[in-house]
Amino acid sequence: MTRVAIVGGGAGGALQALHLKRAGIDDLVLIERSRAPGRGVAYSTTRPEHLLNVPARRMSAFADDPEHFVRWFADRAGGTAECYAPRMLYGDYLAGLLAEAGVETVSGEAVDLGPEGVRLAGGRAIPADTVVLAPGNLKPATPRGIDPAALGELWVDDPWAKDFAEGLGADDTLLLLGTGLTAVDAALTLDALGFPGRILAVSRRGLAPRAHGPREPLAAPREDLPPACTAMLRRVRARSEEIGWRAAVYELRTVTQQLWGSAPEAERRRFLRHLRPWWDVHRHKLAPAVGARIEALQAVGRLTVAAGRLVSVRRDGGEVAVCLRPRGGGEAGTIRVARIVNCTGPEADIARSGEPLLAALLEAGTIAADPLRLGIAVDEECRVLDAQGRASDRLFAIGPVTKGTFWESVAVPDIRTQAARVAALIAR
Image (cartoon, rainbow, N blue to C red; front, side, top):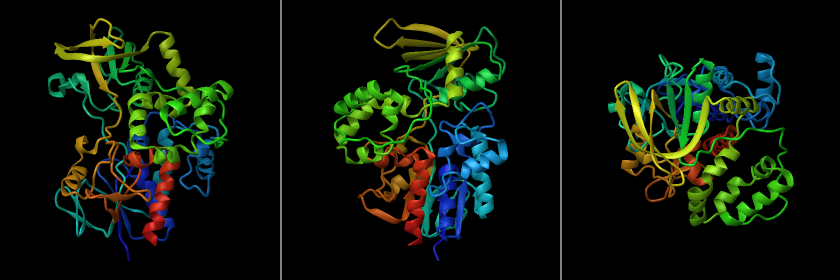
């Protein structure tokens, strides 16, 4: 009888456990080091203003029962298929499913794998024949030029901390490093807490996520798609003129993994270097209510989104002096901020992640970084590749750390597909 250990108790780990149960594998354990199982970073928020980025109809834990979450949401909160539910409610949904399925959970930090199974910090071993790595999004790295020790309490490494604006007033400016989804969460929290000062969000390109419009139909492209980045960009622009940019991007949803998998590595690198920031803000959109609130904050001057890069950062008494150079080569200038919040988004390079388990497995050659340094190298069945490129039948990985192979591997529909595939392989 196979005993399976899942390392990581966020959405990915929860979905994997649920699909293993459905595949008839009852001897499994879910290992989570810090949060309640089923929640992870995204769904452990307690802020009602933090909404899902997709409507309820796309959030079922099970592809063969697409209305599963909709029914749960309707019963618990009166929501509908088109509603964008609070993320904390989705955490309740996953946690409830784990409890109903009777999934065994262990609280502890996995630091290595051995013949006996998963080794935890402190020396305890969790027996397992097969292991699934589901670490979710890795913790953001500290940007270059930032010395957290020197900044002390003026540096906020956790953008979801409950008190990062405590003690600030109307004359204070708070700097968000990053302008993506994490920065949106931080701005929403500041607004809800009544922060009266100014919020400045800065990234190299100053791009912020766009909002969803009316329901977009999921339809496959009607023609063969060009393999090159430049030709694809022209195609998306032309389709945007015909059907609108949201529909033009969304109709690639059915073929994105296929396009990524068939693209030569050189084209993938071109995409990452030149197009990725624009793809991210158009592909990973905000709930309409969130987009409207962010626009309102910008309209009244409470939130500014700017393009630039850090030149220097130093503590000056109870403030931080930040020298910023605007994008385009303008004159660098210094601003004084009350705090800096790290909203740069998850680290992708597993060698820089600071995760003890990943570091140990890398050193042993049990896992390898994918060629683009987007996560863990896996094959199309989510089997982990070792340093020699050999696929394991005992070690799998799912979720964001598989971006190098699948690209689309962050959203619940993609992760549940991976979880079902891995469960079927293990059951066989």
